[in-house]
Length: 264
Figure (cartoon, rainbow, N blue to C red):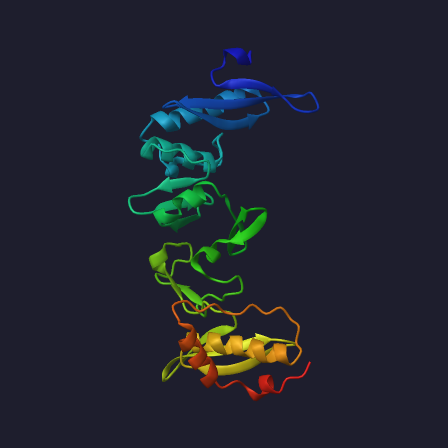
């Protein structure tokens, strides 16, 4: 029966039972449309895929849960039809950016600089955290912007236009990029607080720049190591600062007496 249905192929599970695979070829590209329990469902998927690829009037707005193909496949097929490039992840390209569709009601926006990465990495979510699997690890997508896993929105970074689903570079403003450094707004302007965790959080000091606070954090590490603290702290790396300039700032920074006199 299924031999007479275009785009439908039988397959066998390990237990010997039969299921049906659906696929379609468009512009010389062979596209899998998924696996189904019956030949007629597989054929319905083929017909739906064919309509998406050939009927320009169909858009993502026409999707509903009653469709045969899942929503991510709709995104892939419509992007291929409209933009002549097929991605296995649910990406739809716009004029100056692209959308990554998590569902029919949620999408993320990215610059084209990230297109290659997200065309080969599936975005997953846990609450408000978006991550990908990379070399066997779960990697928070904020890391691509230099934002640490422990960063706090509006304190360490913010979305300029208020849309926390818009990950275009111009829309992300980073306040704190260094370990142990946080920014605080005061009447005299921003100040930067350096803290370090030993057995609880210890304030190292408050400084006028994030670089001073980052170097103060490094200085506190050195002091604690000399005192015998064996914890594996991660020092801050300061770019575009010569060794002599670093040393000059390092020598002048005041460090809290609680750090200076700390004994493990």
